[in-house]
Image (cartoon, rainbow, N blue to C red; front, side, top):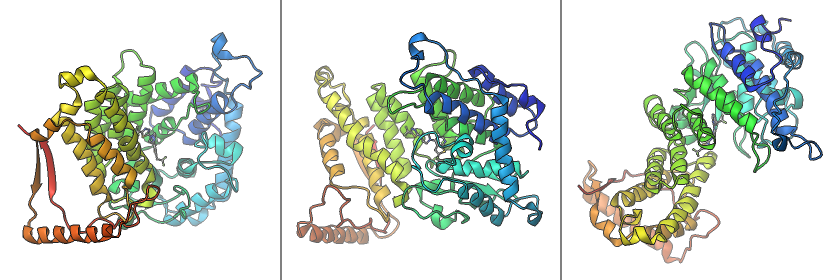
Length: 495
Ligand SMILES: FC(F)(F)Cc1cc2c(N3CCN(c4nnc(C(F)(F)F)s4)CC3)ncnc2s1
């Protein structure tokens, strides 16, 4: 059984971050494809030592002795696991029935079944450190991303060059076939959703759905598949403690991939790197703000600005740095992106993101600036700034349009309460400087007014029955937004 190539073996044993970076650089250089199973096993083995099987309480506390605890990763360990993966895949797939150069849907489903059927019957899917082939081969556990990556790695082992990873902001699937036009589900998503493995991602499903990014997913090359497992490194030892070694390994590998231009079409990896640089800046490297802006530029350039996370990465960073006005602008830009979508039950990850911004971060920010008397007296705070007020309204307008036409409601009474709280903090003067322009619709606007009249009366009817929107669930009396078109509101500060 062909094990590793000579140029792979020479790097072992791996004893430092630099050794791992050298292995990855070697793998990413030259004409050969990077060996996906090898690299995933290596990262999983290191992560296991540095985070999962962390020193037990009785052992020496290395942080005190400042002794580096980078594990020694032996060739034998990695090679044994690699052989196990290759043997398992080759033994389970009879390729004589598939003679084509490219994969077929039937073969994709078969390989997905091979990974799927090897998983432990039941385990906690959301647990950390289940993303690598090390976890798959030593514990038969994989998370949603890990299954998709495992399928792609298996196809590389089988010699297929057309099967690649497709990534949205909260899901993963594969593309395959002659010109990468075929797609197939290969893993599950979320809780309580039937898996759709084997099915294509069709326009019916992916259109206006954040989970599929309006057909603008990240389509990985082999090198970007390496970037996805580096980005997927999880340095956390516990809810509050991170492994510094694991974090800096991830950071150095992301810079290696950045320098080789393998992150330019991967906004989330750029965002991850920005977060790591905020925690521990690398001298002579771009600032976090630059990386977050590169992620936004990447989404604008390559993904028709359909990605939300680049703006929430930036907004979160600016908020943490106290740049409240700019944070508000980034969050309004995020809402401008989500307004293209219709919210459905599989989109709750982005719902949670906006819920936290609207009902936690912005109210907290308003409290801080409202108590800043100096800014108040000199009218320099955002509460007096029409730009901020315009961005605040744009943020909420985006969320309202997101809800319109959606099968699942977004807003409930907590949203309304927090909106009133935040809105009331703005000084009355800001309203004099903004202009809310409605763009008339092509059709006869009177019918639009009649329809609006009817709509308002209709709602009043509902509310007439004292239907108080209860706090826990999105309002039951809520009807998905009117299917009719709506006046486009441009909220711009005057002048
Ligand atoms: F494959 C899935 F299903 F897991 C979807 C993917 C997620 C993800 C990711 N994430 C998800 C988003 N993420 C965020 N961290 N902070 C975020 C923000 F809210 F601040 F924007 S978004 C962490 C990294 N980072 C690199 N690649 C991927 S591919």
